Length: 267
Image (cartoon, rainbow, N blue to C red):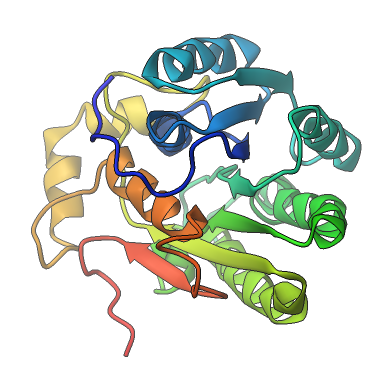
């Protein structure tokens, strides 16, 4: 495991529920929380990958690391994941990192993929908000960090439907954040740019192995960043922790932190 050091962000013994906390960015988010001493419940479809990351989390310092099988496009399975996390007490923070894309310009993209892209990237977020936010309202506290994308802030014709739905995630997250802030709940997003996996941590069916095996592709991605580099999952993980912490993120509500090397620079 490669990562940073303990930063004392006030996350020790916090109860963290992570949807998609077992692959690429999500894995590093899980381990970053663990390094801060938070307990984690990892919800995902690939239980074998979840189990591996749970063991890593315990080694990194998590007081507990549970796994629960969950297809986040299912409201019932999302609810089951939340109830599993509640066995460890109030849910302090939810990281939602579920996502999937199929590259292609709109007129070239198989329309049979539209529903899948919608369900994984947007419906899954609505499921989590719908079930868990009332729980947080009863608790009187809690926060969400949703994984959006730079594609939801800039126009990328090769990720058109994906980008539109990530834009929808940002829009709805900000809208709901206005409604639940009075209840002591914060909702924010991170928007990563190109973030290739590290240490060979690919999920089944991931397109990343084909992309990262081509040096020309990586060099092309670097051209999108004024910094001339691509991000790492750890870059995103630390942005998530910043927002999830009640120390560094206390006054962050409805915000989007870009982790894209400066590709998108809002005023």
